[in-house]
Amino acid sequence: MKKETKYHLGIEVDKLTNSIVNTISGDSFATQVLPLKKEDLKNVTKKTGWIFSWASEFKLIDRSLFKLTILDNPKIIQGLASISDFKDHYYLHLIESAPFNLGKNKLYEGVPGNLFAFTCKTSWDKGYQGFVSFTSKTKLIAHYEKSLGATHVGSHKMVIFPHEALKLINKYYPNK
Image (cartoon, rainbow, N blue to C red; front, top):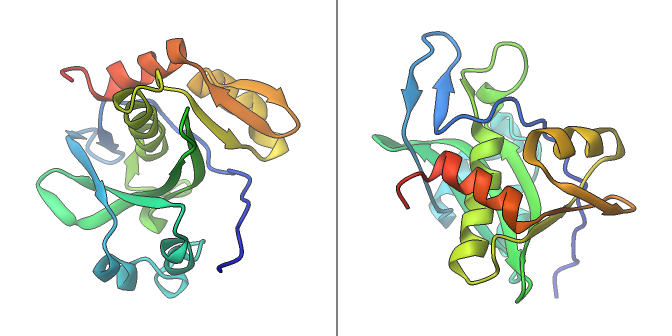
């Protein structure tokens, strides 16, 4: 059996948008979140600038991996998330923006918020009222409280409760 991994999320939520926004033009692009497929793994490696080993994460049987893409450009992955169904909420193990969406010169804003909102919506659709938990790096606890409305419940554990989950869902999925 594969060794379980435990991550402390260290991604900053740059901006809550209703999609993703090009930092150069300011144009907004509709997105979709799809299951990550095995053939996608060749494009999300450390060699191509990704921080985490998504191939290792893909092998873990308790995880579901998803990719964020622009609606009309599904081949370019904007970000990735790894989640698990804990039968009363979803746990967000890992989230990462594409290398070109990091730092001062990032191409798109809104990727992390989009993936958090997707996880909340997945939880809502499953009947869990949008409950999502995750483990944060210490320095980002206050950031997640402010940007996502997440609640620090002790140690490094964070929870997005239904009221805040609905805000995220409605921001990214207004017609759903």
